[in-house]
Image 1 (tube, rainbow, N blue to C red):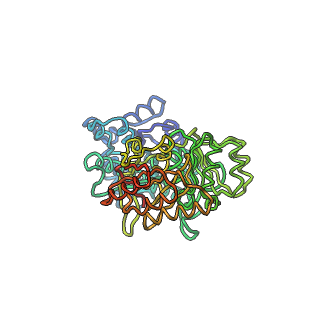
Image 2: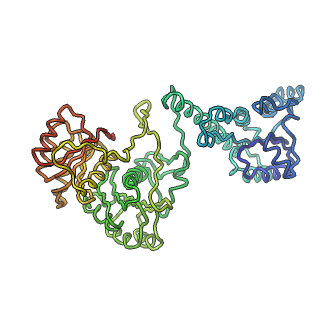
Image 3: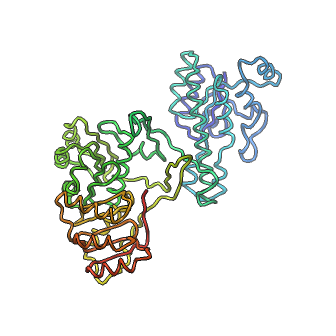
Length: 510
């Protein structure tokens, strides 16, 4: 039996080679892998001895040879294949262990296109695909996490077909993801990220219990190990819907740097938000906005949950708490609620992946776009359009209201007072309906919105929303501007003695 080992990530490769050698395999290798194995005392044959041809063109051609690919690809159960292999002097290669040149690490490290091109693997993917195609006879190993299983399987003299089939699927996923990464990079470099094909590749983190509904299957996939590194289950099982709500709540809670921000979300929409001197006070104020909707909701905490906050949270039923971290005492307290789910990042403050793009399924395909980000100085650089200026507290409230609005489903308006959201209307078919719905909800909750700041993620097309805001006692408004009736809106704000600011940038979220 013969095994060909050629890996960029050499973790565990010496031990794997030694294990194969102990099982009677002859080891073939190339380049750096050959040197590492030889230095470790493994009896190893250089690939050029098999190919009868030297490595050439600065190592670009090493294994692209019939003695390699013929050894991998010929069918062991086909008499004609075996006869031809014997006639050509091609010996079988029964195991291929390959992982590919570190293209991702290269593009993260340098913009040197020559170096990037040299880190596009050619021979590696060819060997992986050859071995995967002939999986009925050949083990293809692309992940060092599988080394022990492969050795155990071969050592037990099992048939191994089920494992080889599993490894085959993994191998094709490996090369597909690798080629997709290269294609996406080239399109990003030369076509502004919008080439003729767009590849969206994620790695499964876990299966969800089901999808949005029990009759649907679901799973979480990740880019760049964000969830593997920063999503720790403390208690419970995250559902498909939980993950959407956690993402929405965390985006809002983390949008304010190191501030003690707490966001409560229900069915993808914020129903409470506040920034106060402590996380306990922030949660308490956030809950006041809409405690009815908060029941069974998802809470994102931009910080560490301690026992006192946990006790306050336990006063109602919450489905999920997602935080930077929890103290042991807080976990013990929250775990008194059997149905609550707890997840953390293991950090001091929430850290988002901040993906550079996003996409949405439409019937028959998807639409793809650059991700929308609120610039750090977007609110600070907004243009005053009225005689009255915002107070210092109103400026703080403007930033909160505007960021929450930008991260909430359109049409949306947000009312913030003393650094806490007091009303929100979202997902409405008209902006005036959103404004009125928010005020009706605030009235139902007994909340006083007078003196609050109103933010809209897109322009007000008519003055009617300003009229409604003035009637509620709003003193400051921030919106993108850009309506053909901006003059009417500005006139209305001046008429009511409001401060009105335009940011010049719309943030629709559909």
